[in-house]
Length: 404
Ligand code: SF4
Image (cartoon, rainbow, N blue to C red):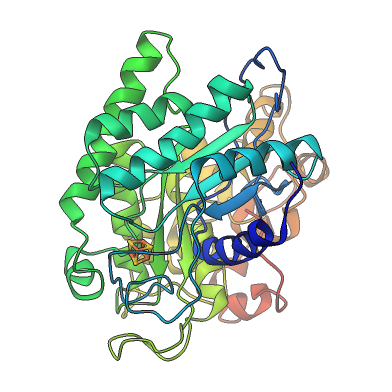
């Protein structure tokens, strides 16, 4: 397909309009067998983002349209916003995806949309894009579709048949904030659709059918309302538990032109988004609860200077030092500097000999950071853990992200 000026101009508008959605990492999709035309069979989906494991992925990330009936205060595409609008037809998105794929520009599609005509109509249009890609073109690349909670559940189910991942954006961590900033959205519809998708995914797995095989995800905007990090993480923990989400993405609010007075004038510090991602990692893989991560903070906010795992260790010094030759896995996971893989290696290695610092240096790259918090056969940190200046000594260099 030759991309003419009109299509290109729409593409610029609708790709730009899609950039505010962070929920497009595409790891975790099992490989789809290519159709007769053999297009897009990939082992990983792509999107213009970094996955949590650090891979750079790229996909055609666009809106079907940035016209919208809704007027969510934080959204540049809201009904009352004075932005240039555009709308793709189903065939245009299909043709663009195929053309870009054949040129090796992309490995998949991330498709979202403003609400046009009705939630049902919009959901149907997006579902048909995915269906035509799969059925008419044998497209086996990654497809991430935004599900519209207000749409008929049957349409959402159809979307799950063709997409690798569905995401339903909660956007704000509390029902109250949604009421204030996105009055046309309904928290119960959103969580109801998440529950429906979870159920269908479970059924499909049991019956070895394909339904949104890379699961479902959501996005929370951070800093558009007054919610603390504690509130955000409590919401995320509840979403993981109740709806089996693969990921919650955090997107720092960015001020938009002619914004509502209810919104802050400045974005939150970028580090806040980073700290929430690190805390989210602790929730999912390190056995921390939301309360533990933010406990002891007067304002419920994460420490911007140190990563959440180190912050927890500094507040709970009585739990350290931890003996690497004896401690339970759960406690080893809480030692700053020791990641999951390092902990598993330590547990395997200590079956054969008592571990010394030399051994540990071969098993983890975070040993320097871990030293004040652990005991090895030839190392006891004595009173390091009680030093008043321990925090200062461990504070990261600017811009350097913590290694768990
Ligand atoms: S529904 Fe709300 S968040 Fe989504 S595009 Fe419309 S105004 Fe933006």
